Image (tube, rainbow, N blue to C red; front, side, top):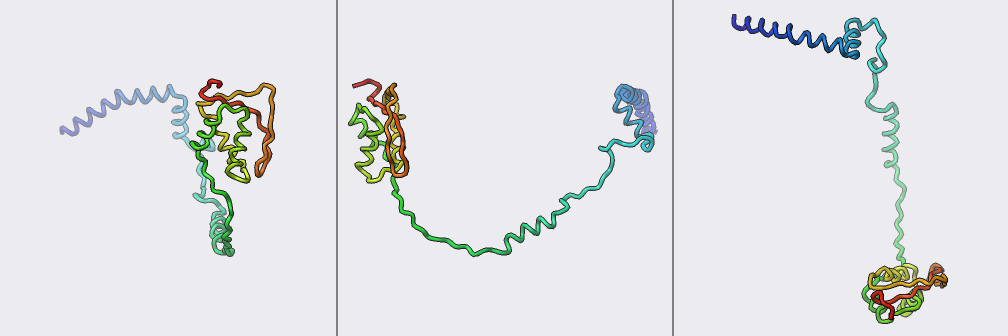
Length: 178
């Protein structure tokens, strides 16, 4: 009897509170109204393409051929030939402190790039472009003041693999001319 009374009480709450709420939502929402009408008679209106059921495959139609092609590339291996060629190259590690000390002893300089070439030719018979650029990185040191000639005087410097046209740069110590 108690359960029956509880069910009746819950039923009254549903009919008095929730049914009017559902009816209000149905009438105020254009989308829900249309959806409810569609569910009442689904065969009356042709559904939109999104709602049409279709059948698809989870894999590509040519999956077999692509898989076969993938595995066939590993079945036939061409002979692999490894040639042990020793390339003679000069293993040179730039010693920044050594070249910086040489530069500081000869400051002030009237032509930085000529000094670079002279210093490198003292140690090496053939000057490589990489070595020249490594020594030229000393220009970015904060202890140096670089002065560029406004006449744009240029020098041609020949390295082992190229010829570079560089400006004439004057270098001073600690930003103060000597």
